[in-house]
Image (cartoon, rainbow, N blue to C red):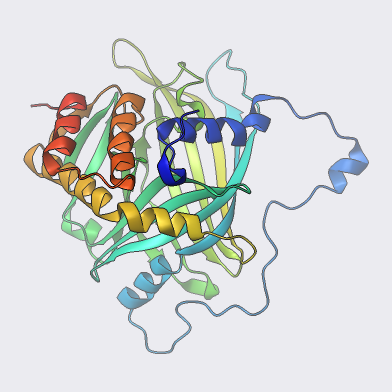
Length: 346
């Protein structure tokens, strides 16, 4: 593993940490007796009694209640990831083992202009507080367009119909190097004291937990739901694993459920994550701007080989390391990296 100044790690650390976190997912759990099964711990975290929902204040507009719900996802968390293939849909398909992992994650509000909110996730792990810039989620109120993933690294800007976007929020999710991954649109609901958002059905690239492990499917078709809880929040996924053959025919392999639970904690020091962000935030702002220029110029483009492309990620993280060492990196260097890995299409 490569070490850098001031505790920085390049993208290779992400892969190492992912491998360590997912170690248990690569093996089959031992069989449990009936008594042990009855004593199994619940998947959900206990709910604290002293919880004030973000929409508790009387007289809030639906728009403001939505905003407060999105902002409530920021904070310091212990995260648990659980994925289970629940149905084999293709003849002869053998379901894969359940996957379990976790970590400690910092979620920061890095932009809030009212109708646009950006949340940056940063992993801070272990006794040595290793820092890895993680994924990002951007929320846009009544978006006129969405950047949709079309498979095999292809992205296309799609116009959103007026009746679809009215009162709705889009969520666009980005890779660790701010490359786009997928986008969905839906409405927040606040009935029965529960604040939740659910997306439309959307395509997304293979998750990193399987990107380097499997070649039998090419697309994950997903409905995402984000729900606030007294303990934090939960990201639930209704996933269908889709294979695309050489003729472009799409067929389903398996159904999968995913539950990413974010539980607020106060017993872990996330200072290293905040220090990392303070040192590199200007650089990553420039990277986001470079991606945005590319999207504005090219309504359709292809990332090579996929949004997870490690070569591109390595290069952008190496530039971030130079920033951490006190060097200056101009926008031309960032644009040059994107030009090597992203191609506009008709």
